[in-house]
Amino acid sequence: MPDQPGMPNSTPLARETPSPHLPADTPESPQPEPYRHLWGWFSEGVPDALKLPLFRRYLVGLGPLSLGTWMQLVALGYLTLQVTGSVSAVGLVGAADGIPAVLLSIPAGVVGDRLPRRLILITATSALGLTSLGLALAAGLGRASLPVLVGAAICFGAADSFNGPTRQALVADLVPREQLIGAATLTSSVGSAARIVGPAVGGVLLGTLGAASCFLAMTACVVPLLLILAFGRWPVVRRSSTQLGAMGRMVEGLAWIRRDPTTRTVLLGSVTLGLFGIGYMPYLPVFAKDQLHGGGQVLGIMYSVGGIGALAGGVALSLVSRRLRRDRLLLAAAPLYMASLFGLTRAPTLALAIPCLAGISLGFMAANTSMLTTLQANAPEFMRARILSLYSLAYAAGGPLGTLAYAGLSRVVPLFTAIAGGAVVVGVVLLWTATRPSLRPDS
Image (cartoon, rainbow, N blue to C red; front, side):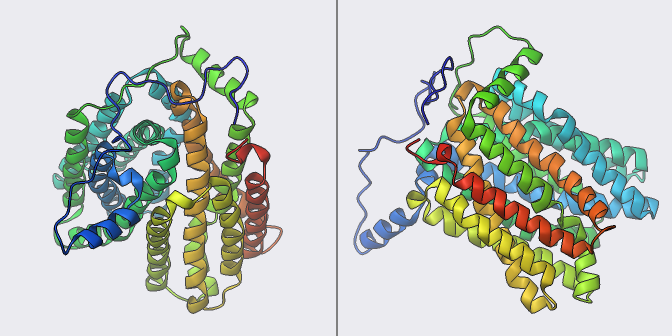
């Protein structure tokens, strides 16, 4: 897309430290026979982003953090129910985690463009670890009251609101534009693997050592990323030369969105996906009980299938990322997501629901990868975190609002009919987004 009038050139700016990317003509180390052909095949299949040393180190640190986050999530809900005996209290703690994401996403984007991103991640990740350590002590000493749990959830949500857009902006700093799809699918795959393994490990720890052990494990899981961020020569992003305050920088980001058709289009698609494509998820227990006539075991299978589908999709997309175009990826994701979510609402058996759940996960990953990498590549380097904070806000606020919208619609039509209609809306809007001229690589 051509640069906007009056805005800095959107091509990557020069960094103050040497680029972490290897030169294109760097010779490969000779491999002894008979491994040369095997090495060549492996190198050809590995996404280019994985060959970048700094990005590899980032993934190594991200894995344990994602695993610990899922373990902590399981333990927090369990401990809340154990302490209070109230389902409403579990919902209150869950809401307390989400509120900071809505309130702080945009300010977090401003901070992410104003301060060194590595420093923000170190601070926010340290806050996660310290909060987990405090919860472990409270749980171990029998002092985990509801106010303590709500306060901890607010701290977790506040730290995540700074972590999310800053991590996404950092990935775009580390990886060239043409390798962003591979990088995004790799980071999503790490999260999907943690989504599968984390709850299982957390359940084992809960059953054997109690909730405090899960929070201690989360504390340990933040250490690898902190060590990786603390050492090494990370890229330094050149900041905007304008002398604006926090409010002025927010306005500057919103002005960019108003002028830039690509950003506007992608944010509209993400808001729709957040509202109607994520808002259905809290109703999966209702679906398992009322339509599949199952209990907790069926619900557990449904969640696991979603994680496995996302992981398989992420690995597959990362292997073919060199040949993918973002607009075509979204064009393929839209009908897959629409058909899968629509089919789920009509599936009478678990056998029919499983492929629909896998399709939903794959379609969501493809759509999210396409839109996220479009924003990462299109946003000016000095404004990237602000744009990505709005993308995060679309999901943080869109999911709960979509859940409420479906609840309201269920008073007029059956709940699953309302979700089926939402699937059609998501599919149509994503198809429209994918066909906009501004999303084409040559526009």
